[in-house]
Every structure is written in structure tokens, then in C-alpha cells.
Image 1 (cartoon, helix red, strand yellow):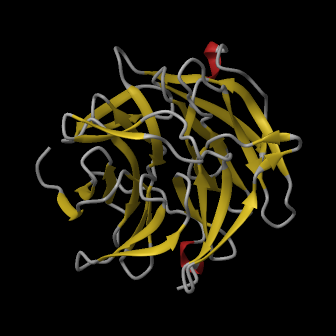
Image 2: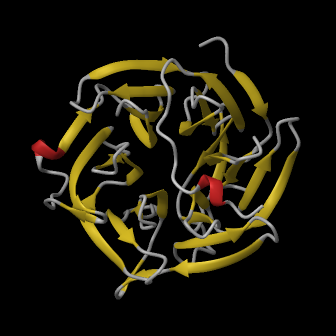
Amino acid sequence: MSGFRVLATGLLFPEGPVVLPDGSLLVVEIARGTLTRVFPDGTVDVAAELGGGPNGAAVGPDGWIYVCNNGGFTWHREGGLLVPGETPPDYSGGSIQRVDLRTGAVETVLTHCGNHRLNGPNDIAFDATGGYWFSDNGKRRERDMDRGGIYYARPDTGEVREWFFPFEHPNGVGLSPNDGTLYFNETVTGRCFRASLSAPGTPARVFNAFDPSACLYGAPGVQLFDSLAVEANGNICIATVINGGITVVAPNGEFVEHVPLPDPFVTNLCFGGPDLKTAFVTLSGTGQLIAVPWPRPGAPSHFVDRVRM
């Protein structure tokens, strides 16, 4: 696709873009273990040292940046691309962290759901009430891997509940513009699921990966679904790996389009700009953050105006 602008290069597997009110952006660098800020003039600066494997990020109602930390990967180069591998020897579990951008202070806010340890938190989305949905992708080892789930947590009370389990590497999470529907992806199968919500943080019904009525869309062939973002009209935009690009699906499950991009590891996107018609996309294999003109506006994110800067 032509017409996109490269905002930053040399990033170590960037994901989790967040647009800030001053026009700068945050990304995580998973292989570097940082939350990194990219300024409009192209300057790149480490905002916080997180360790492990920081992944999805979002602004919380308190103005802090909440980050899913998957605990890290091993890494290797393949065909000029940086590629994540299995669980590293120093892995100690996954967590949800929060960062004060003013100071770079980092706090761990969640490591367990009841007696269950979080294995590989991956992506996060806040609703208007200040609660957040997040995925736990699990971890891969040489001969086995975890099954993951989808959780809802409230930073004001500390409550957390697992709602959907088991799934094969659940990944991107997002909400419809009215917060009434939750969407999430299953990476290895290339499927996107939808769940109607009867109240904030509460699904109208609970299902697992084998319920065909819950599957919004399944990609043909070998395509992996990573993170997602939602347009103002309700379309779901899915960062797609292998068939590198953005796959757009309507709320009724119909395929809208695939926007190809020059990296097989297109992992995350968010919307920004004055009219929310710019998609900021992470090309993780080549370590780039790009800006793509988008034909339709994205849905606004909650709490961005509260960022502590």
C-alpha cells in the first residue's frame, strides 16, 4: 500500500500504540522491555523500563498507562525480521502494569485471577466506566503451550474475573462504539469472536471457542489475527500476521477489505489525528511505526484526555 508515513524505525518489536493529546505516540517494545514514546519530529525516547514482555497498552481512568506484560520471549532473526519465540529462561509470569508518564514510575497492579497466575497478558481495552477487558495469550514452550482466556478487571476495586476460557492464544480485544459488544481474536486460528454485554464487564452469555454462533469471522487460509481496533461505524479492523496488513470486518461478520502492508508481522493499530482518520500501525518484524491515511474514522478511545504528562 502506498501513501503511509514512517514515523519511527529501529524499534524492537513494537506493539500497543497509544495516541497522546500532544500528538506524540506511545508504543511498547516487547524485545526491549520498554514503553517508548515517539514524538512528531521523529524523536524516540524510553518513557519507562518495564522488563519482561510489555504488550498491549491503554490509558486508564486515573491517567496512567496500563500495560499487559506477557513475561517475555526468546528472540531470533529470520529473513531480516525479528521474530518472537518461546518462553525465556528468566520468565516469572505475566502481569498488568501501570506507568506514570510524568515520572516513568511503574507499578504492578495484577498478577493473578483468584489462585490462577496470569501467564501472558496480551491486549487491553477500557470501557467508559473505567473497567478493562484483557486477553491472556498464555505461553509457548518446546513441547506444549497454555490455553488462554479473556478477563475483566476494575482498577478501582481490584476485582478481576475470567469470563471466556479456553481459547487458543486469545489476543486483541476491543469494544463497539457504544461499549455494548466485546470483540476478541484467537491468533492461531485467525478467528474473531463477539460477545454481547448485558452490563459493563458482564457478557449476556458465556461461550468457548467451539461455539460457532460466537465466531464473527474466520480468515481463509493461513492468517494469524493479532490486535484490533474499531471504527466509528462499528467495523472491526484486525492486525493480520503472515498476510501482513489490516483485515476489516463489518459488525455482521461480512468481510469488508484487506489493506496490505509491507511486513508479515502487522500486529497492532489505533486511530488518531484530528478526525480520527489516521491509522497508526506497528510493523513489528521490521521494527517500524507507521501512519496510514484511513478512509473512515475510528472510534475514540476512553480517557485519553486524562493522561498524566
